Image (cartoon, rainbow, N blue to C red; front, side, top):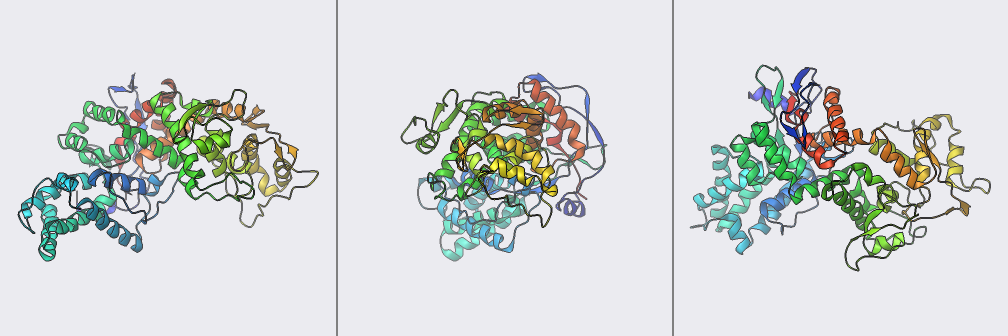
Length: 546
């Protein structure tokens, strides 16, 4: 790759209009034979991806040991198109962020090199002196391949080894010197960014295929949300990922690991913005049940249900919105009015028959997150269903439009009454009609997700409609969401976006439609979808950034 071309491809990507006919992946995808018909694909441009904070933490603990405490004062994640992973492909690092990464690199290196058996196992050799270049070089070559997700070139290894031995000589301590070598590797863009540019496809001008170590990186961060392990890097170095069979074997291995469960939980955490529950603000005079541990408990409930249904049981994705099962600790059990299965941890419960709480739309975390500090918000909840679950776009309010709702009155005490009055404002009506009839179906849950029958002393009317389907209560709303034709295709589109860590482009629409059709045919199996996306041409090819 020429320096000029390499430099141009490191910049933020713009769409490139080279249309390419690529056959669907050969062999088996999931348990279903791949479609032999060619799919029109204009792949997205390649780009760099800065590690998210979760990926950064996971990678460091994989590299240096799970006991390493990773600093949290880091460059903040940027959410773009619903995902921090996508934000990593467009965001840069500030001057302050550079300093934070440097501080973090030295802190974790110091922890990992504290005297003890863990250090000896990590380094793998006993130094003969303060500047033992052979021992330092041996460790840094092994560690560097894991950290940079590829082998270090000879000159790269020589430079970082010189840093370590030079510091060891100055400080009269081999391990303190080695900490400088580790920090040098961890401060490098080769660690902080996923450098995935692709290899030119012969006969296809401007088209590139991810192979070898780059494909190993893409697979690991998609399916494990962390850096590749040695087995995946070995497969990359041996060319096994360049063929369909070898690639499929590694995808299956990754999906069989518990790490795949954690990675899918991360996908839904980003998709639902569950990390924001940690900083959730509620007025405790209005919601006395609000406490410091509410956010963490609510987040865990949703992620445990996602894992159990979608990964452990391989249930239909639509069941996530209709199930009468969930996971609670003492906090959530008290909120839901059910018996806690454990005094110290989470456990599975079946919600009361005839109750109105079903699926994730009945989870207190989502209900509280998409509400206001002192009240519910049918608009925010409807917007969540419309945009996050169904991939529709609701325009933002026009500038300078008063979005405040009328005050409650004797004649109009409920939020439904106030929203109907608000819809009389011409600029507000169209968008509110796309959201409010959905969100009003969740009005039986207050701004903290607690069930209620009254709003300001008046009976709550939880009827509504979703694209022509009328429902009478929250349970029926969940069933209508599960039956909506856009639910599955929306998940597929978002999974492709998340896997590529970049926004999809129109040229990928046909491939995404193929994946969505196959997903439906396979019973809306999420493990199947993960495998199909990892083996798809959209995940394995790119065009050049101008």
